[in-house]
Length: 265
View (cartoon, one colour):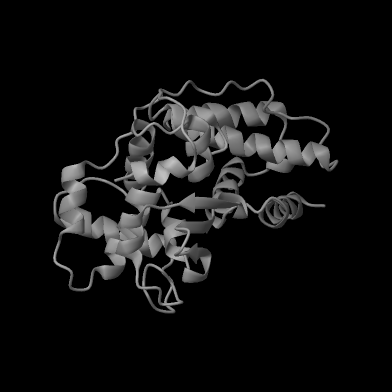
């Protein structure tokens, strides 16, 4: 197989077998393209490529190295290589930044802004700030994935992993009525995640609010932890594989999963 054929086989495996998101697939493509001949590259060539990346941020380099190591792990597993040329490379140290959720003042301002043309945007913001959904999860949410009586959302997250997200009475009231269609738009139209995020970002920028959709999710996580939810329960609700991610938001006492919904108010 040629280098390009091997790369295409890897991307197909990552997409179909591992169910990686289109964003992750594009990231793999970009990193492998920057190397050029990744499938056949020697250790020296990989080390030269690594040295050429010193101008980028530590977070970018760490991400690129993780992508490349995933590729070589796959390549050795399926006999496309005998070795991992990244083995001697050290990931750069990354400073853990304290999450910066959107402030309550800015959140109230956005939710109280003039309603013309914004009901869908408002529902998306509610899903991020009060249920902790990612923008892709909010955009895709259909009323068939919600149980109004038990106040549960059945969310499909990263890697097509499904999880149960309990919501408060308050949030359910903001999402209703049940149109039997898309929750955000109330119609058959479904936003592309990038389009929804860009629209919300433009609205925030027009009001001088320097945040992203992800900061709504950070707000929900911070409130959940402050409300007494356990890291394990929060990880389950937010779809995080690592408790280290959760612990960035707070260290609090243990609580049951169902208690989270009422704490995000």
